[in-house]
Image (cartoon, rainbow, N blue to C red; front, side, top):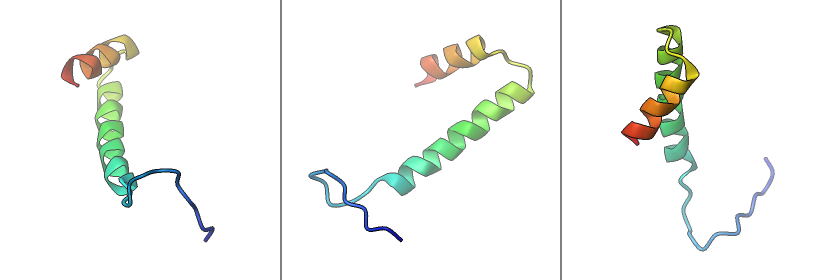
Length: 50
């Protein structure tokens, strides 16, 4: 595995946390698409709820 260096003043990494939220958001979006909600309505919902 390559040795990666980040140019950040922070010692830790939030990548694991970020990926967990991304998975949840992808699942929620996929469910809305499956229910037939169009892209414009999905974007409005995301904007209003965040």
